Length: 160
Image 1 (cartoon, rainbow, N blue to C red):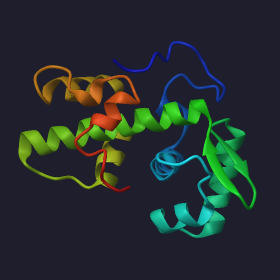
Image 2: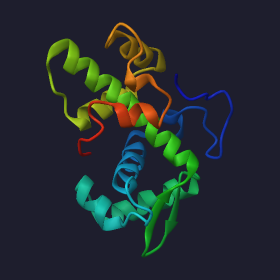
Image 3: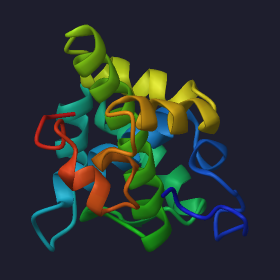
Image 4: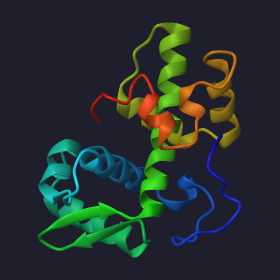
């Protein structure tokens, strides 16, 4: 079951892809993955290294995402996702998981995280829901409400 987007939230959107553009979503997913197993803030340099972009680009995106209420940005210390930011990141990861799992199980093709993310981002919600069902001809672990579904995804342990 997907997240209920019937109500607008802090960032003013009703679904993840309306909340952030594709690049912004990638930053949220990266921050979530880097910060999953720890309580401290994710530093700009970590995200810069992971996404292979300049630290100034990361800082600019952090400021934009913080203004949208999706993360807390403490200059020179790092960032942490807000509850809404985590929710958006998890849903974007679940979309990626549905795409990658479908391709892996139905075609034997191991799609990269980047390609799975791009496809999952642009597909309409109905298409993602159908992929989730088609993987096992019933809802699979990727269709569970985040965070459970993402952590159970066969690709959850892979790197961004």
